[in-house]
Image (cartoon, rainbow, N blue to C red; front, side, top):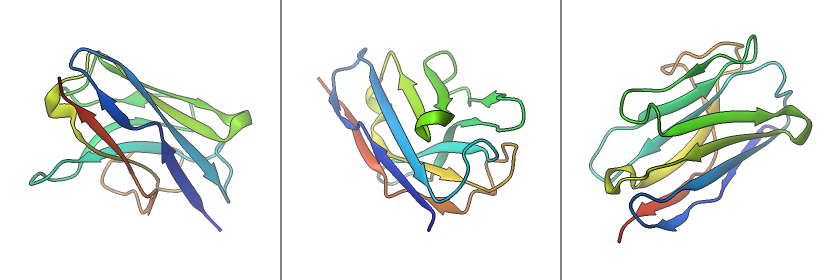
Length: 122
């Protein structure tokens, strides 16, 4: 059975850093793209990163570009999201997901983890 489990959320001060982990099981991480999304109260879900399986290419929207970095460790079946220079507006529930395709299309993810809360506050 397909499972994606996010961990690593918590409370961090503005300007701080946090690393999220997405542990996957039930499918081969070598072959499929993984995306990170977030949803804050009153806001639409936003794709914040993706890493492709074909060539390891990555995607970041302007809101996080230069601050967030996605990476994967296929041997550990884990995808990471390193978040630096965090801002209060980064506060959200963060989800990882897969679309069972090699490449990143942020509108086509259909298997999701349960989410982990990230709160950025002084």
